Every structure is written in C-alpha cells, then in structure tokens.
Length: 101
Image (cartoon, rainbow, N blue to C red; front, side):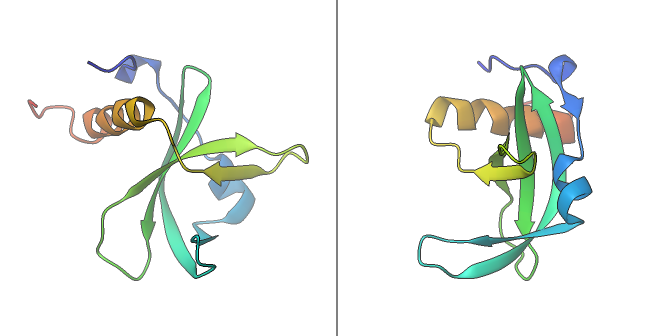
C-alpha cells in the first residue's frame, strides 16, 4: 500500500523551466545520455521527475528532484526501495487512473 495518493500531487515544471525539454545525465561509467522530461511532480514536499532516454524505447526512469544551493534543480536516484515503489505506483495511478491493479 502506497503512502502517497493522487490527491496529494502537485504538478511542477522545475526541470523544464531550468533546462528545457531534455536533460543530459551521466551514468556511473561516465557515459552521457540525453533524457526527455516526461513529467514532474511533488508529493508530500518531495519532488520527482519521470524521464525517458531519448534514443531508446526503454522504460521510464523515476528520479528525485532536489534544489541545489544555487537554486538549480538536480536529480538523484531513489535509493530507498519502498520510496521508489510508492512513487512508481503513484505515477502509474496518475497515468492510468481507470486501470485496476
């Protein structure tokens, strides 16, 4: 059971406002990839972004959005499995609201 609900979501555009429609991220090996910003939202005071690698048909990535000391949004992986599961389920609920799970 998720601790988040669709009624708590605030849609945002912090990443798009700062960087445009895409962001470039480096993986742990230093390889850069361009990701489309699919959605951004806040729930319970935390920001999240849904990204999709531009040149692939792969799955979407969900990352946490933080604000750096200089005011720019930054992305970080969600390390906590329960938090990732909650956010993933919430995004599915927002994307497919009429589907029964």
